[in-house]
Amino acid sequence: MRVQPSGHKTYLVLRKHMGRTERVKIGTPDHWTPATARKQAIQILRAMDTGSNPAEIKRKQRAEMTLAALWQDFDTRHLRFLRPDTVAEYRSIWSKYLEPWGGSRRLGEVTPGDVHSLILDVKRRVSEKCGPGRGAPMANRVRQVLSSLYSAARRLDVDVANPVAGVVYEKELPRERWLYPDELRRFLRAIEAHRRRDSAAMLELLLFTGARKANVGGMQWRHINLADAVWTIPSSEFKTGRPHAVHLAPAAMAILAERREVVGPRARYVFPAESRYGHLYNVSTPFATICRRAGLTDLRRTICARLTRSGCSIAAGRSKWSKRRSATSRWEVLRRGMRRCSSRRYAKR
Image 1: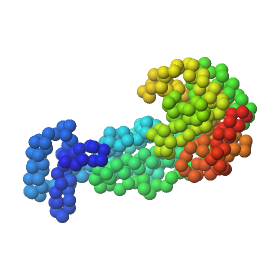
Image 2: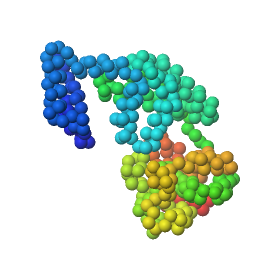
Image 3: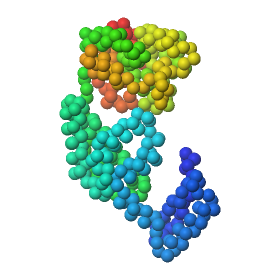
Image 4: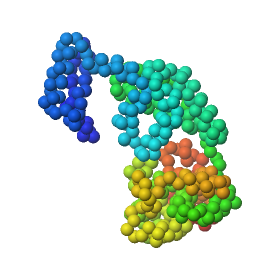
């Protein structure tokens, strides 16, 4: 029996055959008892004594595996270890682009030329639908998911080359657009006029903190220090895997005070909702409505630009909250102690 660090147990046969160490999986204790697993192991060993190699037979069968069959295995085994946002993105890319393109194809039939044609087609379609500059990022995400699938195939002992390895990434152009003062005023007026106050309050916090949607939607009262006006995002919920402290401006504190009166003192989340997460998560529809009224494009980029213009560059570098230096290189980084004053100065503007 093999016991992995995660605690997962598997019955298998380990034996050297034809100069090569072979592993033949029998099953898990959920479906096999020690007695039945022992009987199956004896049958496998007898087959190997006669020259047959069950492991080689399985490898040949997997080599004939289709992309759709590989996806089913990938969805079951690997996606459960990823974040909910990443899982949703992978499944969306599979259903929109990869499954219609090559769900029925054998793994060995896909060539680098096929992958290159797919990437160009995705880039063209998304650019036509969402505008120039949006196609390359999505094309690169499709490339990434397809490459992950073939990497998972290698872990299944499928002897197939990764056709994505020879395909280069599409060049992504950084977005430099942010809101000007008159546009920001129109956006705030559109928020005040929005009929769903919970969604409007979440959008305002997105603007005043520069935080990510998932973090603001899942904000919990126990992570907020109202006395010091500090919101601490735990490492388990933060993208970089490290805890992060957000200094809340007076405007953000006013929103939280209003939310406390609305949800009551016993609420766990600042924005509780009847969803699978237990809190407000998707504000795409109200955001699109406000965008039509105010012409908004990017809240987080707006806060970084305005903080930099106000002379408080450290908040611009850290408000975007990214490990990657390239993500913050456009914003000048100053001393860490300027975060609190810069957030407050931004809110006053």
